[in-house]
Image (tube, rainbow, N blue to C red):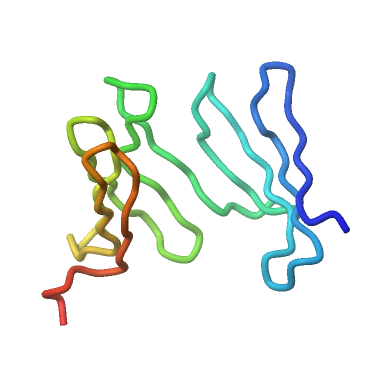
Length: 116
């Protein structure tokens, strides 16, 4: 049984992902690129899922996103361009990420422990 299929362009970039036989995860995602950066994803009906805003200093420097259900969010990174968190337009923390000393993501929490 096939669960995941992907299509790639001539440069090796994924342009379509199809998930099936996985319940709520089923669907099609189309990827749009600017050189090597993903700048937008859309569902199989052409509806916007995510727009990604990149910085100018590094290829993986994501400074913001527009997410269909959440609106605009800001992305915060450390000196190695690891995403350490995201905040909304009111500076409320949405997600915080912690990394091992070797750069592996150890935990991602949806809010700061002191927000409650």
